[in-house]
Image 1 (cartoon, rainbow, N blue to C red):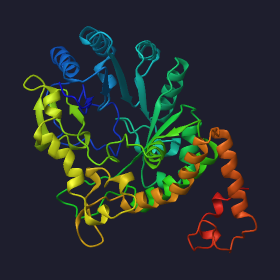
Image 2: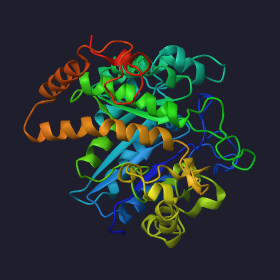
Image 3: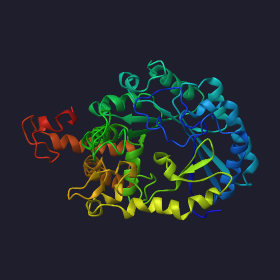
Image 4: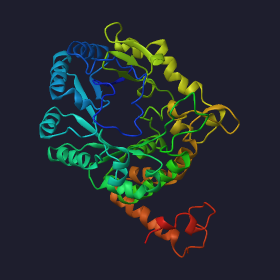
Length: 423
């Protein structure tokens, strides 16, 4: 048993999926799969659940069911999951289950089960239909937005508010408010933005070269800033956006809960359908296979020197540019998978999204600090938003299109924040 908590993301069907999203990072060779095996066996499932619970410090054990598309394992598979969890959980312990899905197979039977067993659900939907159907297609090249949206509504009808997972592509980044408002319209309470940064081959593409659908650092930063302005003035306390919530926690003196924002990573293991254990969801490759269920305890693998080195490398390999960055505490270099460009002085290991993340963190800090102060004084979210809107109106009073933007950028208002001004 390890004394330090860790999380396991399970891929019971590997990369098998009933969709063919164009930006999927998982549909490629060498992703840790066993040919001919479509689903994790019952024997392996029981072995995994028993071992994971035994390795956990408790009393809370978190299971994340991912893919591919994990619902392809079938509803009976998850009935068995719950049965085994109840069998092996010590008295006074509990399980948290999270199912990440595209929603295609989510019918009323699935919803009833998920509600009864208190599963949290993360559902992938890319905001507006035109955008979603451009990238998230089925195997017949048909759009899937209507089915995903129907799954959201069906889950809600059973009392489940799914977390909405939205990718940010180069196309999405051009329409931040359209995307955000479409997601807000579902009234689910939680949104996670996932930047698409994709290289066809680490070997064949030079530093910084990415696919056309990848968002640039600058675009991603501007996207987040635009959404933040809308959120903090109109949705504070009503809707959580993951990166905003995490940033506010860190700026208030807390610790980051997201691995890409933390100083080190490596506490989120991956278990593939064949029992292989990997260091990270973004590194399901032979060289990052650290063991397998049945030959080693999960807790031992999480605490192994190999896995510790993997997690610590996030900090030890930081370029000097990162170490001296004022946003270091918020970013800590970002996700290792995105650290493939050169720093300003030519040092390798800078995050591809660095420019945008720095812009975003510096942009939100004054407003976040003000919100944290007002919250400590006992102000409600509604009162805080009214206060911010009032301050913004004063800031923009008398400013014309050709005047300098009050944000301090040095640009004319019409070329900067004119579209964001209070009207």
